[in-house]
Image (cartoon, rainbow, N blue to C red; front, side):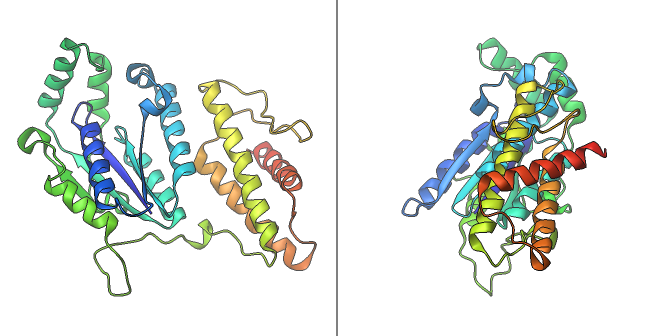
Amino acid sequence: MALVVICGLPCSGKSKAALFLAEALKFQESESKLQVRIIDEGCFHLDRNQSYANMPSEKNLRGVLRSEVDRSLSRDSIIIVDSLNSIKGYRYELWCLARAAGIRYCVVYSDVEETICRKWNEDRREKGEANYDDSIFEDLIRRFEKPDRRNRWDSPLFELWPHKEGIEKSSPAIVDAVSYLTKKVDSKTRDVKILQPTIATQSTRFSDANSLFELDKATQEVTNAIVEAQSHALGGPLNGVSVGKDLPTINISRAVGLPELRRMRRTFIKLTGQTSLSGPPPPSDSESAKRMFIDYLNRELRTY
């Protein structure tokens, strides 16, 4: 139903904002089957200092979070991404996931001055709570890219000022975000935008519904296997990815990001659909679909 991106400097109250937003959403939709889930580093037991110690580790963290978001998006859930989300290019990637899923999207920005964040980080250290090393903290502050509501991937933008106003379920930004995320939409609604997939992000329609289901499921399983293998490798080299004992090995000699995998998956499904119009129908069993997709990936990856 929606993707919410929490954004802000380190130690700016983002996790508290995510928690209050989740509680407010659950209270608002208590009688519905709507699921509200927070995805953060803690879901994967990742240490914040290790995750941001260097660029490969940080890139791996973003990939793990992005993959989990991609797997979790659905029409009956609200996903809240509680992380720094400090790079505008990464927020754009999350926006693309929401667009491909055809759901609502918004950014909640916890706006706190650097000096206050620095003090809050020191306070956490004195209390023995999770905190950032000074060098990592200063690096993250320096590279932070503030959201701009003029950008489609930063809009709509709901701003919090925790140092001045605190954070509560009744905070204006929380209330406005809940209203935006849960408002009923009809043909006359103008203040709520549900992202629409482009032609490039829509799956090709097949006359055989079972073939479409198996093709979509099989290619997603192969994609997930690649993402998982790369996350376990922690940025290191891969000697190939095995999806099943009777299937070919996926030959990967370099890191392949989720956006690239998604692009190749969409292209493969589209090409398979076009071929089926004048030739044999797409595969109706999972193993055949996986084999075809793996062969396609090996050809494509070999050309790069």
